[in-house]
Length: 123
Image (tube, rainbow, N blue to C red):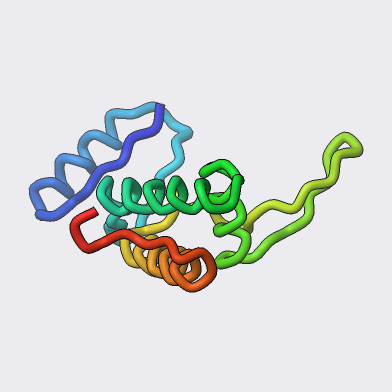
């Protein structure tokens, strides 16, 4: 089982140390700054855009999502079991709020300029 702890006070840090001391070894611990994940509203807006673009292109929202990931994050070729496929270098689900916002803005700008598709501020 994997867990994430956000430590904001010295008391929380001490509790985490006590928690870790009580656990069996070996264990894996990752340390880093707090990462703000994309928001639900950001994700909903992205998929609403993909749905609008889908009506214009005939591609499914999932297909458009992968195409936009490839366009804005780059690609790599994979070959497994004789099947070759081009895949995006990054997935949107692993982006923090800032990087997801930049991706969303790029997608929205591309769809507006290429397809005449966009959402209003409240959509």
